[in-house]
Image (cartoon, rainbow, N blue to C red):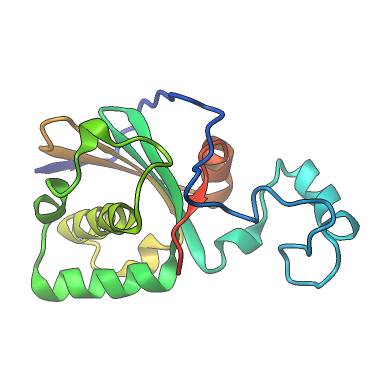
Length: 184
């Protein structure tokens, strides 16, 4: 298996589709809801103006999570947040057991996977693929991985996993049409 850090060409189906099974209150917030920053104020009286200026991006979304988008043959299949603590535990387990990406790649029916129609296990397998690939690339420190958000592309014969680490703000701009959340 080879890994690649080249730019990933992405194409989107159903660009306005949000995940029906998962939601992210920090992305779609009612004006009268409590603000996502934790101030206790209504969103409209707190961060609404700042979020409009920044396109909805908030650093708070990425304090305990990082973003991940999974592509299969350059087609977006999943977009979600990964809790950093879960990723660190998974990375440590994968490192200790010596698991590689191939162990996880064949556990998902990539051809029939639809954005927003996945279960917790599918999301978990995806971030395990990121962890195993990072370790395979000699980056066994999960704390460096969680400082970025990630786009991964898996080829149809599953012989190559391409990784692209991007800063959280850029990932959010690209991914906000697809955001869902892995529950903690």
